[in-house]
Image (cartoon, rainbow, N blue to C red; front, side, top):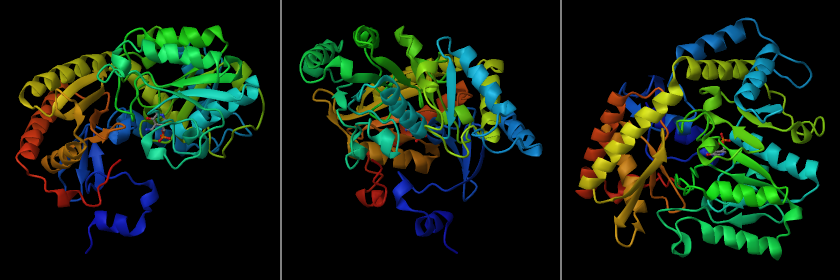
Length: 436
Ligand code: PMP
């Protein structure tokens, strides 16, 4: 009898896989998933942040069962539904500048919609985004992204890509990101006239690009520069929003009020759901401009409401801040013992651990990162790596993660680092697990 993982290999397309080890999940509760052999693994990824309340949260399960028990259609294209309207109203309450909400299935479709809508509604053809940005996997969202995994994708005409300020690897030795702002100002005076730019897309923490927290003040200065020229600010909070950073909107750490906020992943608590929240002049500028049959689906919308209710009822924003600080402190202590760790950074429960083979040169340790996540998996911990150098361990656990679970994760990681240093993972083990 072939294993579930082998059946997956033989049946599901590689096009949609990003695999780091042979995990086959058969169920789960809270912060743990269960594999084919019945082994419990502590999940520090939470399906890349999508399982925001942990596996099988009763509030989500109940909301989904209720929505399907008396089903209010499947779509919101040609009718209103109570779950979609209520979710939109709640998101507007949580986002003071917002006037309208667009509901979708994924971060990708939401970012693509916003990118198309800002250009069409303003008549300005260009967009600014960051090197390393991952805004999605559809043609339109890839077109405004600049992550190395998408080098094959066609870019939007006139896309202006600027470096993301990385305090660990500062450009021209300037950790404040000032050189990036100066370069953009020069571009505005030369080959990128600002009146041609509709919007700036930013990630308040650049996640797939390496879980990079921008230096203090950078985003505010960038936003002010863009605002001066009437350029809209779009905060892509798909991975780091919704309380994960210790604030409801991650961009609020920067003192920036964006024009548009994009949410996805964790909003559905494990169901497909995304949202773009912004001004009526953009999100109401046309009808039938960006719609898919199941957008605003009442089952997904009901799950989204349950997620928002639970975040408030269980105090999960404060918990993410508190457990996240605890986990980061434990990882910094781990860095004292494990020389492969070059940097620990993050906000709340969005945490990155950058691996380097030499702390002085900061040479990225990509192979070691691949071996580390592989070994952690063998020891019962699920996490992946991100980054343009493929060397940053990413942690986006459920917001419900406890301190005890955080401690358990660090204990396993400690062992995994020691084992990798001792050569426990042979190169051959990684065959077929290219990651990215
Ligand atoms: N935006 C950001 C910041 C993301 O991290 C991702 C996915 N990693 C997306 C958009 C796309 O989301 P999805 O894959 O759910 O479409």
